[in-house]
Length: 95
Image (cartoon, one colour):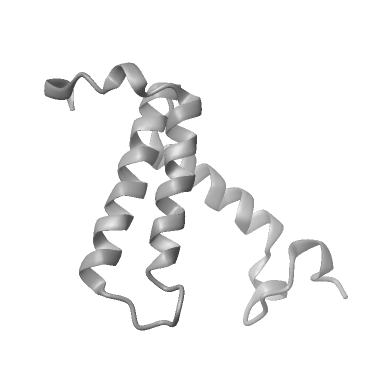
């Protein structure tokens, strides 16, 4: 990337937009069914991950740590004894 001098375009806003755009391209692989071209899926997934890593770097956060932190929040919101085998949103697990 340095050889192209693209870093100048990598504001947090632009990177967040790029994540959304590339995510839509990833979703497009599955637009008409579950049988997607795995090579194309991998390419689009690589684009999404690249922009996510660039944004994390720009924001000064550790990608691994923020994922671990989010997993802990999820564990608290979705206790295994209430959420196992259910796709119910956390605020309705008691129902």
